[in-house]
Image (cartoon, rainbow, N blue to C red):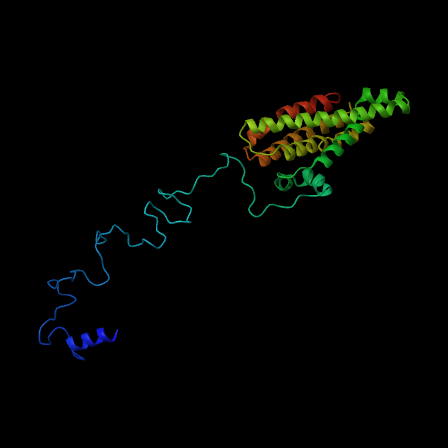
Length: 276
């Protein structure tokens, strides 16, 4: 380093310059005739000055094919396509919610269906679905006029096996119809899971008929008030089925309604046909 400094001092004395002083412009910046100078002002550049093919933004995260890494946009400036089916509802932002316990689950299906379906779309709920369906099957036979008269004429020893049979039959029927709803939703473009869809469908099928069944126990299934309430709860069940399948499988509501159509018909024929 000292040797280099000494050579530079010998060549250019201290305070000296490699160019003689004198009037007129000195060669350097601004002189286009001086070798190595550019006619453009300092800081400017011409297109094509980068002989090695580098872009002025190269090395700073610039993508030569368009866009910048991490901005989510491609070559044409459009955002990346959404993988969800067209027309399907979008899940709420944020981390997945914790599953609901049985009490807020049962009340939420009737009072807060949208929020409940979003919360439970990835969680199974077999115990509430099986227990509620079984208890509903035990009481549902009393809502039918013919069955109620037959039950009242039988003895206790004959009544218990009959009620147990109707409870198990209700559980199996609701499970089969709910599985059909899930399979149809998958065929129509859904991506939901079987256990959450089946569990929610079983609860919707039984809980929506509780008001009609409560009145049918006292007024009889053929009473006009019971029949009107039965139709109203059946339509409400169709609304809940469409909402649930739409959120669990992320499909549009017309497809969700079509997927639950067989279960709605089964609900009408198996449970409410005797009263309606």
